[in-house]
Image (cartoon, rainbow, N blue to C red; front, side, top):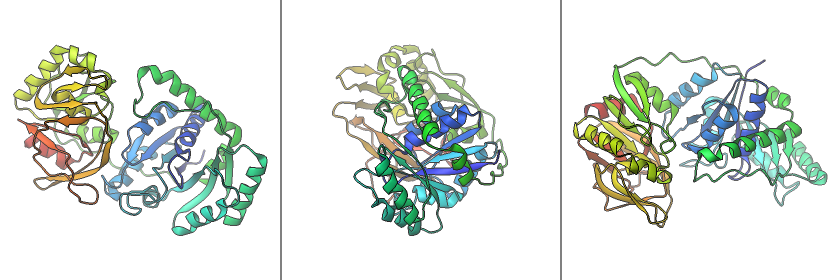
Length: 429
C-alpha cells in the first residue's frame, strides 16, 4: 500500500479528536496496517491511549520543548518504517503557547502534514460553512484535506453540513453518530490495571463507529505522502549503567528521552513498588506518574527506600521529576488524609489535600545549558526546599516551580525534555 500521514485536529478542545484518533488507530491496526501514532504537545495520557489502540508506542512532538529540526528528526525516526502515521493535535488548531507557536497548525506546517478536521456542530448547521472557510483560508499553506463531523444523528442535519462543506470548499469525509456508551476513563486517574479492559472496549467501540461511518480507503487516499527518510542512528557517547523507574506508579516517560539516555549507556528498568533494591547504576532516573495511587506499596517497600537513600548519599547522580520528586520526599499525604513515609532524601512533605492543578511550560538554565519542560500536577509541597534556579513560563514570566539539589540528586515538578547537554551536565555536576 501507499504511505499516508496526517494530523487529526479541531477548531476547539472537546471536539472528539481523541475518539476519532483512537478509532482510526484501532481500525487500521485491525487491518494489519503498521500504524504509528503521535501526539502534538507534552501530554502523557493520550499517547497511552494511542498505544492501547494501535499496539505501538506513541511519540510526543512538541515545538516548545524542541526545535523544529529535532521534531522533524523524531517524526522521521518512526514514520520511515510505518505504513500510516497519525498525529493527534492539541486544543484548537491554532492554539499555541504564543499565538500559534507550538500549536497543531505549527506542527502541521513544520512536518508538511495534511490535516483532517474534527468538528462537533452542536447547535449549528449551515453556519459551519464560514467556520470551515475561515480555517481553510486563515493560513492557506495548511493542507486541510477534509472534515469529520462528530455527534451528528439526523439526516437533515447532515444534509445542511454537506451543503456547508460544498460552499466552503472542504471535503466531508464522513460523520460519526452520538454513542453514549463511548466514554473515556478519567484522565486524572490514568491507565490503571483495572481500566485495561475498559480501554480495550473503548478502542473497539471507537473503531466500530469509524468502520461503519467512514471510508478508511478514502481517508488514506486523501492523505498520501512520501515516507520519511530515517535519520542516522544516535551515536553512543558512553557506557554507563542507567536505572529507570518504571511501574504502575511511574509511567510518565517520553520515549525520546529514553533514546537520549541510550546514548549514554545501557538502561535497566526497575520497580520502586516491587523490587527490593536499585540495580547497579551510574545514573538513576525517577520519572513522574501517579505515586499517590500506590502509596501503600511504595511506603511498605522499605528495602527499596533505603537503597535509594544509600545511592544518593554515595554522591552518584540522580534525576527525579513530578511524582518521582514526591517519592524522594519525607512523605506524601493522600486525599483521604493518610500520610505515608517515603524515601526521606528531600526535606519536604507533599499533600494531595485540597488539590489544585498546576500546569504549563517551564524553562531555565543550568550554567549554559538551556532546559525546557512541562509541569502538570495536583499535589502541593509543604515547606518546600529553596530552588537552585529560577524557572520561567513560556512567556518568560517567573514561576515558583523549584529545582532542588541534594548531593548530586536533582528533583523538580517539571517533566524535562532531555538533551545530550542536559544529561552531560547532570552526570558531571
